[in-house]
Length: 472
Image 1: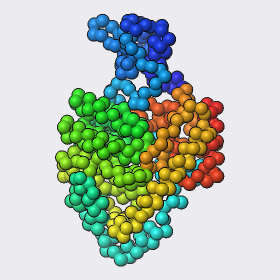
Image 2: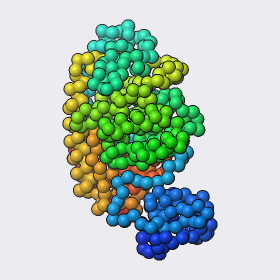
Image 3: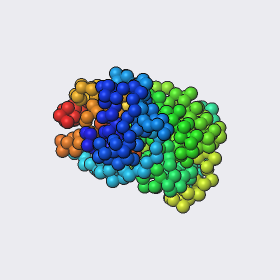
Image 4: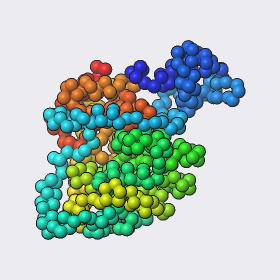
């Protein structure tokens, strides 16, 4: 709803409407910032930000010392741009309380869980994993008891390295540092290449965990326009690199959360090339990479000849979140990141490493991944069909290439934060789109988890959620 949006977005929408209706003609000068400030009862800075938005959208032209004029050709309102346009401005990240608020209901087992992005244990090989766990801890009791080297158990890291042999630039066992999940890998990477107050380029929408890390570590975010199919806008990213606006870039290239895109190999190569050319490190979160439905989706790290990509991954989404087992391949930043790991958590538990080493070595993990991909692809299709059936007219659902989340776009007037409250009261947990942006964008979006088989209970919850959305 308009009163919940940034003021400059609301004013921008009104001025766009006036321009399209002909109240301001092509080439006509708009009122000054001070005049509009008095008219809308907002600050001059708010009007200035509004002008930046309209200029980025192609509606106006700012002429130094002359004023602001309507563009000669105004964008066609019937053509919805596939890539959003907005000023590339760093923003402070302040989302921690909001994110924790929306995560809290996940603990309530009685809810229909459509919020947290996680495949259901119903499609995971829990019994086989636990049997293997008991076997390896019995046979390797001493290794399980002892501290593990920060680089990890060689049986585990060797298998990780083997999986990268198909990369143009493989990862060696010496490149790998084992971490307590993917988030520790991301945190160590941010601490390695940035400092407090630095700006980090991120996608928008971006995984809220990445934004939470920036918030807690007091880094600023520069949101880069991101296409639902092609990924982050490389042109905008290069502009940010050229201007020296960012110290690092934090993103995903495979089955990105929440959009679900997988970047093409050509765009991944170009991304790495930009990083190398401008000397800006890329922190790549590939936690959903193993779940890409079709083909073999290599990460950007696979093309990293200069060592500028800090690759982060784990098994939390593809097998078992309770393992808390991740790893990072820091490239040229290896020495500093290892120092930070040493003072952060010294090492990572040995038992999960022994378990995953065995599961990969036996070929079981590869078989499981093939099954998981089929199940997740089926569940996301079925969930998307239910959304389109039960949600209000104008709802949009993009087709993910992997993972188990759907990015659902409601009509613009709707606010998914209000829908969250109403759904929770009805026993349904969702996640509003606003927490996937440091700049309070995406208010009319929500992310739905499609990680569970579509049972009658899940189907009823999705259709009920659609009814609630229709009444907003």
